[in-house]
Amino acid sequence: MHIPDGYLGPPTSGALYAVMLPLWIAASRIVKKTLRTKQVPLLAIGAAFSFVVMMFNVPIPGGSTGHAVGGVLVAILLGPWAAMIAITVALSIQALLFGDGGITALGANCFNMAVVLPVVGYGVYRLIGHGAPRGSKRRVIAAGIAGYVGIVAASLFAGVEFGLQPFFHHTAEGQALYCPYGIKISVTAMVGEHLLIFGWVEAVVTALVVKYLQKHEPELLGQEERA
Image 1 (cartoon, helix red, strand yellow):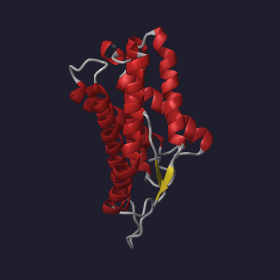
Image 2 (cartoon, rainbow, N blue to C red):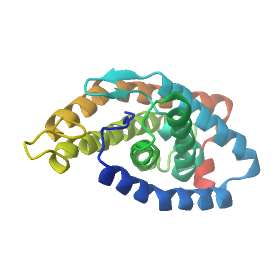
Image 3 (cartoon, rainbow, N blue to C red):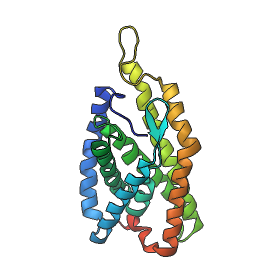
Image 4 (tube, rainbow, N blue to C red):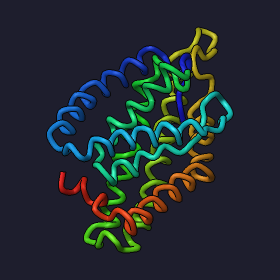
């Protein structure tokens, strides 16, 4: 799902950086106020976990990739604001040191994977799991569905961002200057593979980790609710 350099026009990249800037500021302030000292290592582990799972990516025709993210799991453990920080750190390291995702597209990648994915997924988790005990099967099912829906939603936004580029940026002859694929092709490619493959990976990973924590570290579940 990483968007490389050269696929988004400057207006799109700039607009998404402008969207992310106040969100990064707000997330930093909220996490600083709500995150307890003993939760800081968990935030670091969440960023590391997201970094590792995103490195196992599979190319998607057209120039992007598909992979799990782990953002919903971090949101379940620490809340969506902390997940935003954790995934932003992972994406920044990947872009700056490993060339995975473009620097000009970092704002877009963070919007898709550090905002849309954990916020949508966390909302689904709370909707389905609301009122259920921490050790219940409904929480595990909610986590799996949340992971699936969150990553598919993020892929939809990425596909739309790709698909709008030929409409916004083209020569007088109609040749695309950035991403050459229209919205039907880009959304089908991005969403299709995440619906069929990567969404299930995200769902299984999220559900299994929640199931494990229910048995071995139940106090970790529900910390975001207290925050």
